View (cartoon, rainbow, N blue to C red):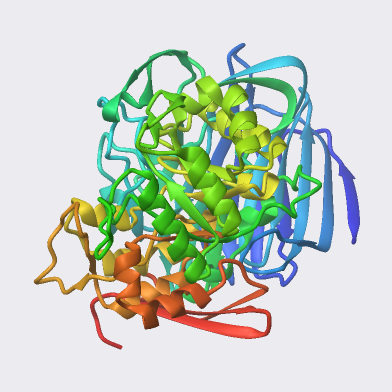
Length: 587
């Protein structure tokens, strides 16, 4: 570890930090504004781009500043990952910290495959952030893969499921009046790719992107702080802000803010093993994680209880879930989920009379199968202090929490509060209807899944190019963290014979495409989306699926090209698993 300290007293300086291998160069210009820029392997990627924090009191942290000090540090360490795609994460970077007068600073981490920065403040009391300025100015009108917000709840642009296919067009063609969520990928030319992400998002709103005034770059946009809300949206399960403040966050005056990051690569396959979000996340806050057991999950909702050859009426009832438990036991899955309908939507104490929860839990316990319950976010926020201890005592192992569909400061803080309280009762959390992961999964490892992906459920109602999407998300969305795509369809269709349907749904692409997703897609809590009957009818495929671990010791990308194909190898207990996916083109 090497340190260099420099003291300055002027308002016009330039600071530089290089990655350990010297290929990534970060520059911070201190002029009338703070401007950051990045070069990679001799190519300019990010042109000077302004950043600042604008406070409600009129102060702008990042304009007309005076430097107090600068410190650069070389860091070479590693940490043990919990339920991840590798056991050990090597963390090597150059750290640059510049402190300014007026009690704030900006710090950078410069990696061989990424650059990240964040603001720090050392102000007394509380701080009201009116807005944050973040820009990513590119050198040309590059092609991009852009996930637009579109599935608005009650017409509100900041209320969405965060599930979108990628629009593929140049930066300048960004849709007016739209916002994009992260991660977002740019093809910077000469084989280089840039993925924009954020990390360690806590007590602060998530970052969206819009086209900035250069026409060749992006600017950050944040959801204003909610002041009043009402129930609405899908089936009245969403909590919709009806009045918002003229600021984005009210927070502690002394804190670190979320990281704004870019991952970079010279070959697309390098993105498949980029750990930037894991590295930037706050370390685990749980001492004992032995009870957090990853595994596969027999899931009821996607297959619509499509059981055959049974002597009971399949549906939301006790015999059906006992059958799912038997299937899980016979096929080495560790969990089942009781999805929507096991209780009243807004009162989780009122159990469906057709569901004998105590009998199901007792039966599952005898079979060593964990039971996870579904709930909408609204009900959880109203009842979690009561129901978490109650259901934990009954033997429930976790919660699938759905329809958050927001990432303002309140919603983001809630995901931490839920994870913390659930951990106190040794319960896992799988977030659905939620923004992308930003590191909470490391900080609270009982968070074992995130949706925020245009997953298999969409085949029940939509006709889209899933094979191309499936070979895009490993380079984008899955870099952010665990991705609950819910694979495993046993009925598989060509483009010509596909039909979207709720009962007995199907997927596009081959059966092997579905099998390979269990290796390619990262998530420690992995669904078996189809019905037990479908899997038992294809036992050879099922045996393969359930032989694949959900966490690994080592991951090695083999080859790939965004939107075209991906090939990856993973190791656990001395066994290597190789998965490859393609779009519609044979290879």
